[in-house]
Image (cartoon, rainbow, N blue to C red; front, side, top):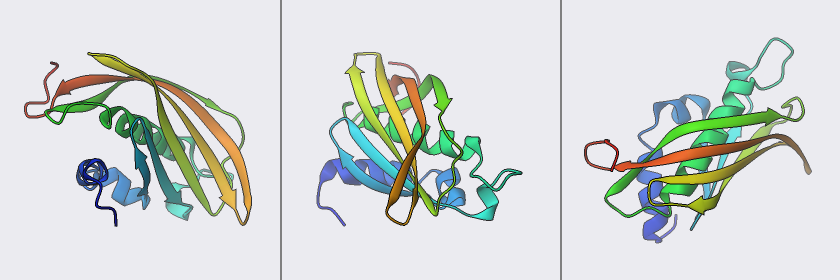
Length: 146
């Protein structure tokens, strides 16, 4: 458990996401402009061939990107995904998965973020997806655009 206020801000928001709980995802590293999220494999996230469903991988990358953007926003601001493009590079087969979001440009109204995901099995890490996302800066209290 970290004493870092930035970590606690992201952790408090992350805890409100029901989908992250449903997926069994946990918050990993939190730093200025960077966030990592981990998710275990389970049959609940599998697709017909036994791989993790692309939707579950996209979900954790999207959240990692959003939270990476939020780390660079003022306390009275919040984040909302405006758009993303994902490239699936390989089947997501592993015991768990890791997604990392990293801010490429933090603007007044939008942040552009790059996300990546890896499948992990034992000591092996295989990159399975890459994302480019646009995050909107919104008013944290009302949820409206600032």
